[in-house]
Length: 454
Ligand SMILES: Nc1ncnc2c1ncn2[C@@H]1O[C@H](COP(=O)(O)OP(=O)(O)OP(=O)(O)O)[C@@H](O)[C@H]1O
Image (cartoon, rainbow, N blue to C red; front, top):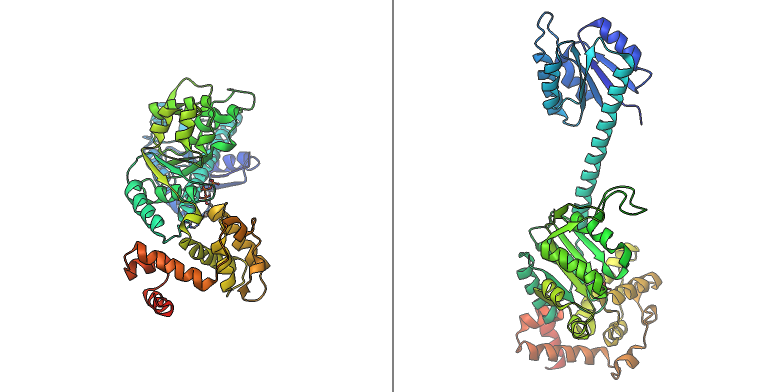
C-alpha cells in the first residue's frame, strides 16, 4: 500500500510529539496542528488522506462536541477523507455517534501503538479505495461525455436519407426498441448512435455489443455478468453489458448471428427486464433502451426456423431500413467530399480536390462495402495523392467499376445531367428540394439547368 499523508490535530503538545514520532516511519507525511481553527486552511494547502482528530479541545470541557463539530467540517470539505478520532476512556458512546456521522474509526487514549498503526493503515486503505472508485466514476463520466461528443455526423441529402432522418427524430425521443436493417457498412451503428444522442438517455452511455463475435460460452457472462468463483476465470464480481448500459442504450449489433440457445436467453432477459449474473441467485432490474442491427433477413430466418419469431417481435417495435450506397447515388459525391475534408485534415494535405474523372469513377462504382468502403478508399487515396488533385489512379477499388455495374461508362456531364433530370422528376421541378437532394446551392443548380438546357 502506498504510504499516505496524515494530519494530527491535538491541543496537547506531548500527545502531538509522541504521535508524530510513532507515525513518521509508517506514513509519507505526518503533520501536526494544535488548534483545529486552522484545520480547513491546512486541508486546502496540503493533501491528506487521514486526519487523526482529538475529541476534546477546550481544557476542562469534555463533551466531545468540539471533536464532532470539527469532524463534520472536515467531511463537508472532503467527504472521502478518513477521520480517525482519539477519544478518552469512557467516551465510547460518543465515538459511536461520530462513526454514525461519518468518522472512519476511533482509538482510545491511552493508545496501544500497534493497534493505532493498524487502525490508521485500514483507514488509509479505505480512503485509497474510495479515491479509486471516485476516479473510476469520473473516468466513466468523461468517457461517456467523450463518446457522446464524438458524434460522427450522418451525411446524406438523398430523399431516402432525409426520410430516414425524420423517422429517427420521431423514434429517438421514445424508448421504443429499434431494429436497424441494412447491408454491411451502410451506417447502422452510426444510426444507433444518432438515436441514442437524440434520446433523453444521451447523458448515459451507449454500450455496443458485437453479437457476431460472441461465443456461446461467453455470451451469458459478457451480457449478464458473473459473480466471483462462478467459473475458473471469474476472479471477481463483474457487471455484464446490460448492467453497464443502465440508464442508457444497449446496441446489439449482428443480432442475426445468435444461435437459438442464445436467442432464448436474450428473449427471457428482454421480457423480464432483469438479469441474473452467472453464478448468482439474485436478479437485478435493468433500465435500458434497446437498439439492434443486422444485415440478415430476419423474416426469412424466422421462416427457416433459425430466428425466433417472438424475439423478432420484441426487438422490432420500429424498423429502420438503411439503403445501400448504390441506391442513393446522389450521396456518393457528398460523402466522398466529406471524407476528403476529414482525411486531408488528418494527413495535413489541404487543399485537396477531386478531378472530374474521379467523381465519375466513384459514381459508377457499386460500393459493395457501402459507406465504409468509400471511407477507406478516400483515406487511401488521400495518403497516395501527390499535389492538390486526387487522380483516378489514387483510387484502388476492389471491383472494376464499369464491369460491376454493367453500365456503359458515362462522361461526368452526362451523369450530372441525368442526376438533375431524376431529381427534377422526383421533386416536380421544385428547385429548393432538388438542390437539397443533390447537395448543391440553388444558384448552382439553376446555372446547371440552364447550361444543360433542361
Ligand atoms: N451517412 C453517413 N455519414 C457519414 N459517415 C457514415 C455514414 N454512414 C456510415 N458512415 C461511416 O461508415 C463507417 C461504417 O458505418 P457503420 O459502422 O455504422 O456501419 P454498419 O452498417 O454498422 O456496419 P456493419 O454492418 O459492418 O457493422 C463508419 O466509419 C461510419 O462513421
